[in-house]
Length: 489
Image (cartoon, rainbow, N blue to C red; front, side, top):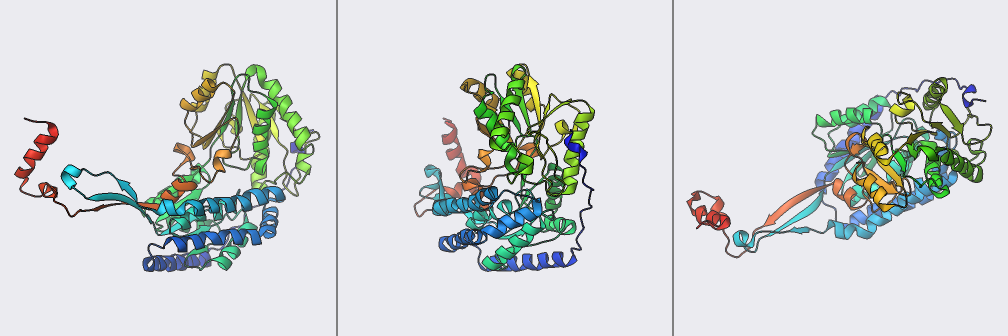
């Protein structure tokens, strides 16, 4: 029986009256600008204290975080809540604490002793000021709180705008932050669409947005009016390319296991898999075996994250329904697969060799549907990837290093992984971000610290005699220096 037979009545997303929320945002923004003007460069101890408060905040609210995620998603695995939306942020903060002193140190640059004598040059990473963070609904704690590690580490003040699609998590983040930080250091602005638009148009010193490319364009246009620098994390159709001979139980487990995370509602999830044509049936068998072993009643159990809203669930059902109408081969990875309308839990389905004009092949899926695209040779698979927009993540599998290196060298993506998926987005030390349609800029690690800093170039003139005066009129005295530099006789 088709899993589409159980239909939930669509609901309309409520639009919040955001007048008070916008006024609160403006007040908080002005308070933070004033506070930053009075303390433009907090020292190492102050920054460490601010970051250190994150860990206690998250650990003490562990149960409430799990409850809020379950409330918003209908069902959310507690283990995933603890691992990703609590412990992962603690680890990220600790990594920044471990390295912050070296990151804050001035970075020396070379000078020309012949002209500048004993002058010194260096880069000093200074705070940008007041930073905005527009948060998506899929990781409503992690992406709201996690970037604080680098933002506060860089010495900034921060205002967070959670997603209206995750209201329980939005309220919890607001409560946790208010109990941990002064309003003029970190604040949370809670509201709907009108607040989001006002937020993007605020004259931030830097703005981080995580979400879809379509909305990302609007955010960037609003930010451009204030010449606000932006970091955009935008997702895309992230492929997993299994090179010939790499369809093994271990590799298929990595692909399908990654799809299980948030039930596919993750910007670096596997969107589709490219599989050698003669290994497609083996891929299906290994995928079935993994789900039968790991989660035989997946959509009925506690490990299945619910789809965030009825609207998003209806979109996924429409995508799968279109594939059924076009008579695509659809394989559900559990017996008696059904959608649970009450919790919006949806089984994982494979769509084998779908027509290229289907929505699942044109749009980022962001759910538990995975197209399996057969290919005949590696060049065709690489061309298939390069024919689309540059993805946020790319995953290549195989034991032949020349094949995997060839895929990496002939494609482009925000990040990549070999013989695994999505780990590039979870390492505190590794820059995370997109390229082209999947975004711009980086956060996590030293690149995140630098993203939210102003790399101020500074020159200090030395005390010994130099030739700086050659840059002043009259310029006749510079002729000998220019001739010497060019080797003129």
